[in-house]
Amino acid sequence: MKKSLKDYNFKGKRVLVRVDFNVPLEDGKVTDTNRIEAALPTIKFLANEDAKVILMSHLGRPKGEFKEELKLDPVGKELANLLNKKVVKVDDCIGSEVKKAVDSMNNGDVLLLENTRFYKGEKENDPEFSKQLAENADIFVLDAFGAAHRAHASTVGVTEYLPSAAGFLLMRELNALGDVMEDPESPFVAIMGGAKISGKISVIENLLDKVDFILTGGGIANTFLKAQGYEVGESLVEDDKLQVARDLISKAREKGVILLLPKDVIIADRFDKEAEAKEVSVDQIPSDWQILDSGGTQTLEEYKTVIMNAKTVIWNGPIGVFEFDKFAKGTNEIAKALAESDAKTVIGGGESAAAVKKAGLTDKMTHVSTGGGASLRFFEGKPLPAVEAIDDLK
Ligand code: ADP
Ligand code: MG
Image (cartoon, rainbow, N blue to C red; front, top):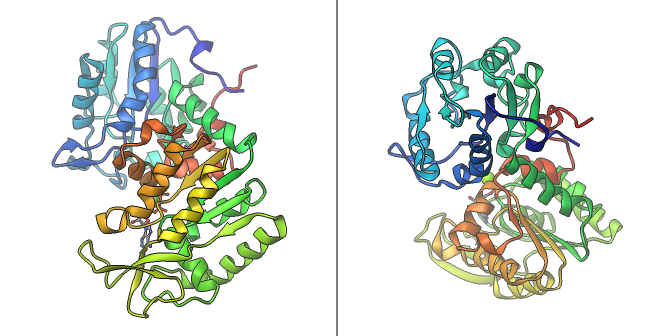
């Protein structure tokens, strides 16, 4: 068991909180506030407990250098709106400017530091940089589930210098994901879609020991189909993973897991939102067309039946190019089936969560994870380094 927010007295303490404010920006505006909202319970709790709340996060990929367009100022504005409270933003995450700002904080104040990835020491988990981050604080709280699979200075390094605890969002994620992975009620169904099989092989391998069904879609299904000898034309396929796909199919068979591939799909004459679309059986794909949605009529019927009879469902990866309306049907129909089913439903993966949100069904799921990579790591059955680094409850 890890220490959590109830294991400390925060009154008057300088609390450094690693949040995940890695949000999408367009023209200097936050276009999706999900991750900021997800961090509010911890921030509000600490402020109410009379702590001095110091927030830090990474944003985008500045590669260890200052990037004007990746400053956290727009996030600070959005946070102040959502909290309905003043948020002071400083232009650095270490050094004298931070010290000055922290020294002038009152209990209950909220301070936002600058993008931690403006320093190379962040990704290198550099001890000196970690120490500088920790310098102006008394306690460290990890609430950035979305960054918990990375051993960086702001997630792992700082725990060498400060007593630590898990925040509310982190606990909620660990409980929800832990619940389905450790004690799933069967029938347990995994829906695996998304672009590529390569990042998900070890996830599928781990799931083969736990689930009763795997429903495939997206680029993953294309690779499975080609591995089974189907012509998939210009579809997104990983040709160097065909043998892996065949091995996964035989492992599933050995373990009694039913691994389903699409029977019919929506194909396109090119990769474009205006492409011509038609539904065909998987043995009818012309060599110059490509699958952009695994959700053909028969496929969806079969997948929905499995979902409606499930007690636990995890979903990673959209089953089509849902960003194009013409090819979003499969993904939307699967999302609807999950929303309607009585099963425990857990969604992991950045685009999958976005697809569920776009369908307006986020509230209908048991849990939609805020972490793409971190939830995948969880489904792989592997520990999250930043969670491991939090102090144990003795
Ligand atoms: P997640 O972020 O949920 O883990 P991935 O990152 O693995 O999911 O993949 C998401 C992407 O996969 C989506 O942007 C979607 O457009 C793409 N995708 C799904 N099906 C196909 C397909 N048939 N061909 C090409 N891309 C696809
Ligand atoms: Mg993704």
